[in-house]
Each structure stands twice: as structure tokens, then as C-alpha cells.
Image (cartoon, rainbow, N blue to C red; front, side):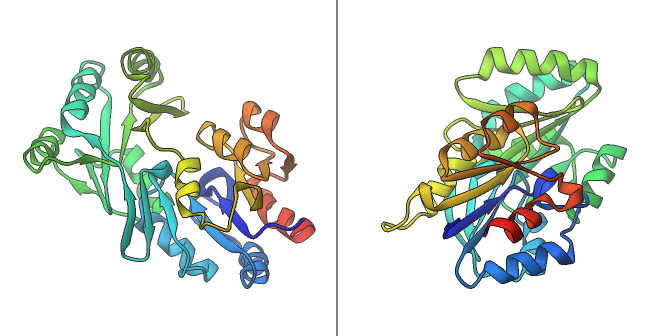
Length: 265
């Protein structure tokens, strides 16, 4: 296979553990890096991605953060799309009624109200520490500054998240991407962006999507895997993702991405 660009999701895909890549993955990416652009594409914030970039020795490449809402090339912002504060306030009111907590992300900042077990897991997985302050204060600051969130995470019980997911998809389907990460988490970003739109932004005039091989596991990877020259799902991917993939490799915990690179690239 001849592909000049490799794009990979992180959690559940390239990462064999919850927060790192293996030496085998580093070796395989290092082998192809001289002739292949390797771009990390994730729902994560920048600080939760750059340490992985450093481990892979691909710091000269851009990164796609927040499912495409923020695209960075080093310190340079190539694209930034936020959810406006008034819309966040409306979601906050809906979540508050169901006792669902918010995690708010903007650039390299993560805001939460309290240090819960869920937040502790996120700190461990991403190696990033949030700012602890009331959500209402964060939203007030953003409204005053006429800014907003690159990503919103909603954290609650399965029962609360079930109800809120139905409410959000009914109310905001035309405005927002609403992803069910798992039974107790919902991730939200602007409808105008995606991992695919960010990849397209990074292609130069002589490049096309046909030259891209991409790896993913979840619903927010579907569009990306369908559009590129070669879409690869890990074996632990959602059924819907595996159904549209060109190839299915090993599980993320078995270094599926690295094995595919070794065998095909």
C-alpha cells in the first residue's frame, strides 16, 4: 500500500493502554515517518496529545484536537470552532435538572466543578489537570469574553445520560455533534466540524483523501474512515465502524495499528 498521510485516533485505537503508546508502535511509526505524514486525530485537548506526539517523535506534524474543533501546528492555530456560551448555558440548565456534571474545554484549558472519580480517571488517562471552579462561573466568564467551548463533556449516571442524550439529540441535532462515548459520558462539539473536515483542511493542493490511511474505533471516526483512501478499524471498534472499514486490524490492546503498519505500510 502507498499512502503519504496516516491519521489515527488515540483512545481505543493507537493507544494500547489508557494513556500511552508502546515501544512497538513507536518503532513502526518511526520507520514510516521519513516518507509519511503522521497526524494524531482525537477528541482530546492539545496537552493530552502533545506528550504522545513527543513519544512518537512527530512533533513537527500538526494535531487535530476536539474531534476537529481545534487544529494546531505547533503554537499556531490553524482552525478553531467553538460552541457559544449562550448555547452552553442552555445545555447546562438541562444537565443540572438531571444532576449531570459538565466538563468544559477551551484551547488548552479544562474546567470542572469538583474532583470526582470520573475526573480522576480523566486526569490519569490524559495526564492533564483541570481548573476546578463552578460551571456557572466559567460560562459567565466566556459570555463576557464572547467565547465558548471547543468541546463539552457531560458526565452522569446511565439513567441521567440516557434521558439527556435523547433531549440533546432532539433539541440540538442540527447544531451539534452529540457522541455517546459510553453509558455515562456524552461528548459534544459543533456540527460544522469533524475529524474529516480537519483532515481536509490540512491537505495541500497536491494531496487528496485517497492518499490517507486512517484508523479509528468509535462513532466519531465513521466519517473519516469512510472518506479516506483506506479506513482501518481496530477489532474492538463499534460494530458500525467495522462495517464500513476497508480493513479490520487487531485490538488496540494488541497494538492493532502498529501491526497494520508493519504488515502493509
